[in-house]
Length: 284
Length: 262
Image (cartoon, rainbow over all chains, first blue to last red; front, side, top):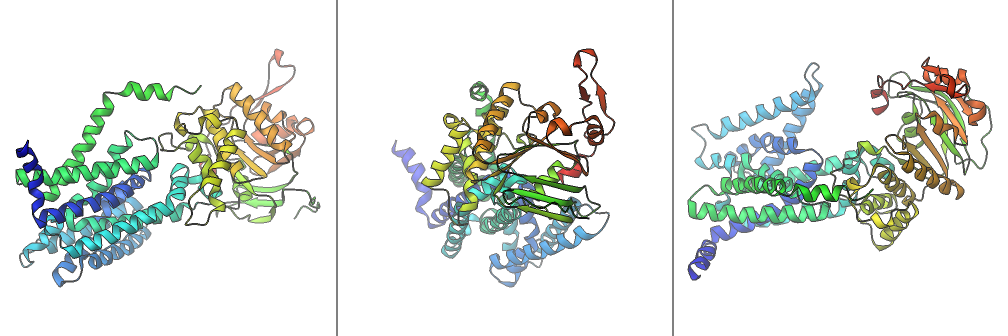
C-alpha cells in the first residue's frame, strides 16, 4: 500500500512537476470549458488553425525576447488581416484562403524555428514544455483562465440561444456575430495560455478532445462543461504520471491521454446504446 | 405608389406598399395589410414566395426597400424546429428561458423570476411536466410548443409561426390550433406561414404571397381559383369526383428555397 502511495505522491515532490500540474489544471479549466462551445459552434477547424496561424509570432517573440503572449497576439493579428485580404481575391474560396494563409504562416514559423541559427528552446514552441513553466507563467495562465471562465459565465444564456438556433437567435435578442466573435476571441486567449505548455501542435487536444468525450454522456450544457473540465484535469494528471514514469514527453503524453479519454468514452457509449434509445422514445 | 388606406389605431402591425429583398431585385413587393389584436392570419404561398422574408421584416431583421411597415407590439418568431439541432444540450426549460434574454442586462443570467415565467409559459402550452426533458427528446409537436413558450416568455403580442404544421401529425396540429385560439382570445395576434390550403381556410384572414401580394382577406372570399393560381403558378388541379369541386395544389418544388434561407 505504501509503495503505491509513494508512487502516486512522489512525482509531486518537485517544483517542476507541481507547476506542471497546476498549469495543466488551469488549461483544463479554460480550454475544456470553452471547448464545449467550440464543439457545438462547429469551430474545431478554427481551433486547429489559430495556433498554427500565430506560430510565426511566437517564434519571433522567442527569438527577440518579447513575451510569448505578445508575440502570439501579434501573430494572430497578422493572420486575421491576411485571411481577410486573401478572402477578397476572386477565384479563391474562403476556406481555401484560410487554409493557404494558415499553412503559409505555419511553414514560415517552422522555417524560423528550425533554422540552424535559432536557439534550441525555440523548437519547444512546436511541442511545448510544460516542465519549464515558471511561477510567472502560472500567474498569467491563472489570470487568463479566470477571464475565460467569467466571460463564459456572463455570456452563457446568449451563447446557448445562438448555438441552439442561429437564425432565430436575433429574435430573442442574442446576436450570432457577437457570440461567434466571443467564442473565437476566447479561443485565441485559451490557445495563448495553452501554447506554452502543450505547444503548437498539441494545444488543440485540450480544447476538442475532452468536450467531444463529455458530449457523449451529458445532456445539459453546464454538466457537459463540468465533465469536460474534469476529464481534461484527469487526463492532465494521467499524462504527467505517464511522462514521469515512462519518461515520455510531458505535453505529448497529456495530449495523448486526452485523445484516449475520448476513445474510452466512445467505447463506453457503444456498450450502452439501449439506455439512450429508451430515453429517446419516452415522450409520445 | 403607396397604399393610401389609413392604419387603424388598434393595429398591432401594418404594412403599406412594402417591398423587401436581399440586395438584388426585391423578392417581395406590394404588400399591404393590418394585423388587429385577436387576428389569426395565414400567410400562404410557395417556397420562395416571400413568407420568411415578410417575417424577417416584421421582426426588424430586414429593412424594407420600399413602402412602410409599422410594428407596435412586441413581436416574436416561432421558427421551424427541423433546423434546431436535436443533440444540442438544452432542456425545454432552457429553451423557454432564452425568451428572457431581451429583458436581462447583458451581464445578468436568468434568475428565479425568469425561471418562474418560463415555467408558467411551459404550463400555458401544456408542457409544464416536460420542463426538464431534453429538447431533442420531445416530439415535433412538443418542440413547436416549447418554441411558442419561448415566444410567450418574451411577453409578445404578435407571434409569427413559420411552417409550424409541417411534419406534424393531426393530433399535434389540432393541439397547436387550440393553443393558437387561446393566445388570440387573450388579444394576441398570430401569423402563420403555411403551405397547407386546408389549414389556411380555418383562419380568420389569409395573405397570399408569390413574390408579391396576390390577395389579403377572409378565406371564403379570398381563396378563389384565380388567386390560388396566381399564388401557386399553374399547379392547381381540380380534385376528381369525390372532391365536391374542391381544388388541390400540386406540392411546390423546392427549387428556389435558397432565396428565402439567405
